[in-house]
Length: 124
Image (cartoon, rainbow, N blue to C red; front, side, top):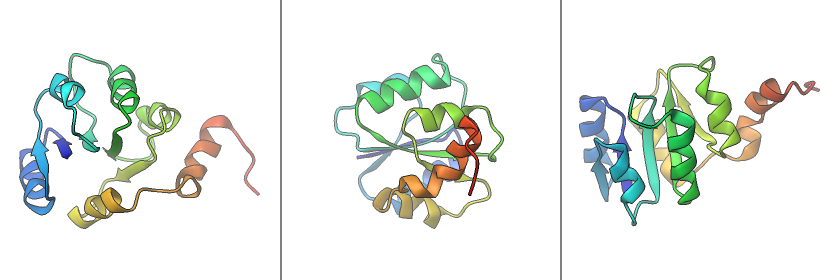
């Protein structure tokens, strides 16, 4: 089951049509209570949980998260990476980019440049 939680009606509908076994979600508690979810497609959006707490609870359930972010400069990128969220797609993106991530999650090497920046490692 793929949960779609983007707070963008058009994107939600388009993804729902394109992804088999998917469901649009409007409330964070539903995500946390869902027992069959394997993937969560989410964007930053206000809800009763702060981003880090919510994503920690989602990752605790071993749910793959595909996070849609505006750019590489958002503060939540650091928290996402530290929580093991490696499937991050930056705007602008195509629906196909999201669908590919469901089947082909990022490898550590694909996001290591962001982690190097966060922890201050020298690049060689």
